[in-house]
Length: 310
Image (cartoon, rainbow, N blue to C red; front, side):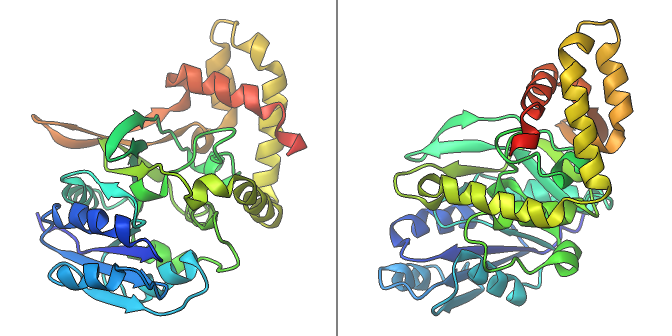
């Protein structure tokens, strides 16, 4: 099996105390066809010295003032030459063997255009929680994977083919926190998100990080994205979900009621490709349906009642 070239971009600014561990997690992958690009916003800390120590793994390094994280990410992907792309923030980490798993999946499944795995959170280098993940295409398009109605699509676990970025990028630089949310909705306009039952990366929780300090700003950016992007069929689907939510407490108690609701929502709103691994058969793909996730179904419809007020 020929593994695809994977381009990893790390945006960083004044994050030298975390960058070394990030680079080490990529170096430890031992991936044979890797392109690693670091884009620094002109840091005055130890960033340049750290990169200099790891030039054997760093393919390109830019250090200059920029217009924020997404400007840096766009610069990185402008340089990238890989068949598969992703970005890893300077305080996040890949699990050992993650890139090989990703490379094998993209090499084996031609219809997998973008991919995610289980979301994980680490504190002080130790994994403290692992979440669930289920992201039907239509629900991503509608903006429901926002951390309130359904879980976030965690950026550090997402990988995509280069043609996906070429079709929808770059990320608008007026966004400062929700650029990944914007990108996933653009991808979902064209392709289903495949979910691999594997741990690929962890989000590092620490004091003072943007995702913690800017929760209100993040919510505002999501609202602005949805105001511009939710229209036509997507808006009609959202209204239909809201109507279902009013009947859900009753329907869920009727024999076959759940199945009736699921079928009426349509496959793109209730299922996604799932990839599972076994020693006997390797990676296999099947469709996974929202109806199999009973707690998530109840959670979805319970929260849809208030969707129109957001």
